[in-house]
Each structure stands twice: as structure tokens, then as C-alpha cells.
Image 1 (cartoon, helix red, strand yellow):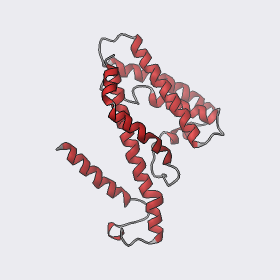
Image 2 (cartoon, helix red, strand yellow):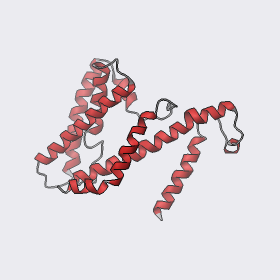
Image 3 (cartoon, helix red, strand yellow):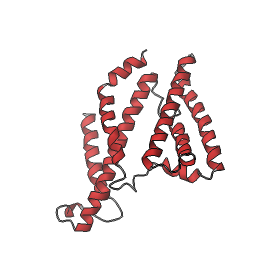
Image 4 (cartoon, helix red, strand yellow):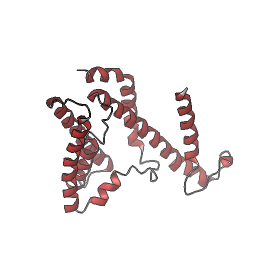
Length: 205
């Protein structure tokens, strides 16, 4: 029953999102749109909706997998040094690989976030903890160390605002041609959903 309500809420909010923006588009006009408003829907509103749904579903499944592998419900990308490692990766891409494309910078941030998460998992494997509450605390401590390194060099190269803009998660600027990279996460998202039980077994050792 709860799932039905959630699906209904998702549908209503998704439809509402299409009509929300700077340019006023009323639902009654959906079948009699002017050329300019139709272009707004195709180029901006629909891509924005797709990117929000894909990003939200992907992050929720990724968070669930992290909790299953670490066997701790408090673990998330923000408490496992994943986000902080991605911030460091963005810094490296801006300083060392400044000439790379947006996709290249995102791939570098992805590699750093993956390495940071692997480091967190290795620490958990080596440290014997009596209470599961210490697992996210260790992740937060590791994340703060990585974040302090990234912040130091960000101030040094005057890139604080630039890095912050990369991590805001702002979907207002999403238009056609700037969100298609999210399509690469769709097959991974489906595979992760189908093999969720395998990750549970991996978390049990």
C-alpha cells in the first residue's frame, strides 16, 4: 500500500515539475503549445525531469548497496568519504587536467570517489569495532581528512567557489546535450537492483 502512494506521489510531482520554471506553461496548454514553449519542454523541462529521476534512483540504490556491504544503516556516501574523495578528484581535474572536457572531469571525480570508498572499506576490514556506530564515525573522520587536503589546495589555487558549484547538485541548468552522461548509469542501476542480494552476501563475507 505504501509503495502505491509513493508511485502516485512520484507521478504527480513529475508532472508538476514539467510545468515549473521561469517560463509559465499551464497544464491546459499542453495540447496547444506554441513553438517556443514546446522547445522549452523538449530542451529543458523533460531532460531536467529525466536527470533528476535517474540521479535519485541511482543514488538510492548505491546507498543501499553501501549499507548492505558495510552491514550498517548509518553508512552513506557522505559518511564513507565518497563525497569528499569526489571533491578531491574535482580539484585534481581542475588543477592538473584543466583542459579536459566535462565528461573527463566527471570520470576523474568518479575514480577518486571509488578509491576513497575502497580505502574506507579497507580500514573497516583492518579495524575491529565493538559497536557499529563507530563505522560512520570512522568514515566521517576519513572524509574530513580528505576534505581538509582538498580545501587547502582549493584556497591555494582559488578554486573554492568552482568546486562548490560542481557539488551543489543544481538541476536548473540541465538542458538537452548536458545530461546524456547519466544514461551510462542506467544499465549499472538495473544490474545493481537485480543483484542486490549478491551484495548482501558480500557484506556477510
